[in-house]
Length: 191
Image (cartoon, rainbow, N blue to C red; front, side, top):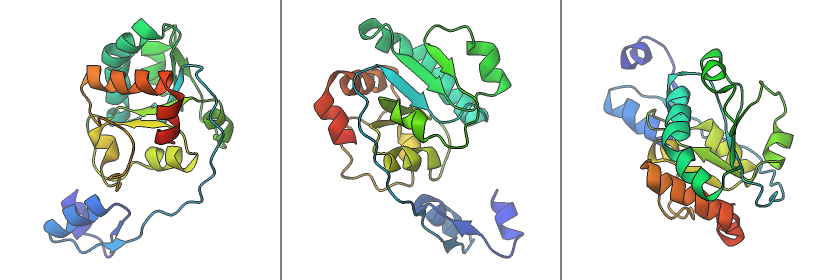
């Protein structure tokens, strides 16, 4: 990746983490911060529906597999009907989970505002990856309670974010989701 950056005339970075990484490897990128207009949506309530933003690519597939096999079973003990919605599910995800009772596979949707409107919380259980996660900023722009892993939080200044434990440990992540599903006050603070 660094060799590629060295071979081009201009590199644009949108994440401060990426900027620091590139500079430490002799690349001088132009920093262009991501800008968006917040469009907060009313909280739906405790319908136990979660959303993951993308069902394609190796890091997203890893996050989905990890969530479904290690985190969701813990959540389903307390909330048996908790459902994970996955946007733009690729063939790999469709093959693995199309018959799973707690998974709802959604196609690519141009305007996903209604999906967010009908979602209680957003989970981003990324274990690998670097830089800014646009799906996190998108969720934040809709003021949806979002449970982050450390990899999902990379590049975002979240010092004052209300999530109690930013972890990828299955029990810890599940606990955060359960707390958000159970407590309206916690969901509001995450919003």
